[in-house]
Length: 219
Figure 1 (cartoon, rainbow, N blue to C red):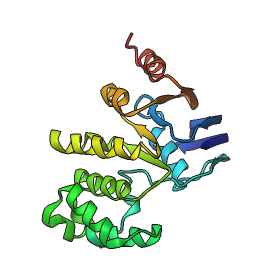
Figure 2: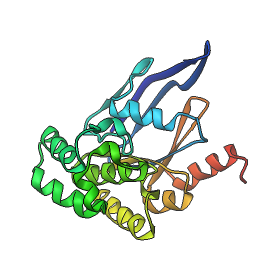
Figure 3: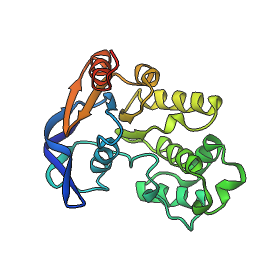
Figure 4: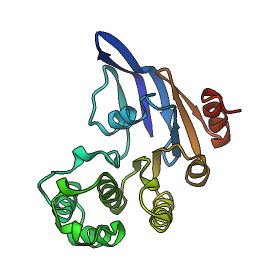
């Protein structure tokens, strides 16, 4: 369960405020795989970072009764001078999992080849996302935060990512940011639409997609 308790987040840009979360009060049930939908700039990634605890709200709070992953694709999770393998081992220790088992899983999953033993700062954005997705899928969380990462890589890698994600969803929930409605229908059991700082939850994925498409002018 993730509960938004009067959650508000306001950024100040050039002396003007931009509200990405406007007094949101909403509860996401445990075990739900929720598509977080919204137009570019709506604040979806910021909301994920607040859920993960890497960005503070302006006011209000987020409550949870389970473990939550970091936002996959968020480079702040990793040390730039450490290799992919060293970052993996470090996070294994932080989260109390077997480091050798996690390294074996991530190395096989991420398809980074020799780059797995090179510094993280040398990675492309796609490589960073593949490492982050691999590490997060290798650690058991109650809720996974996923930001467009299943779109990374070739068709074979995307298929592998979706298969691993579906396997994790047998025992966990997720909040997934994606612009691909085919992925929403394939991977998610519910949807939430973020628009003008308001977040509306839909237990039926198709209802959420219709709301999002209406906002985007697609009928």
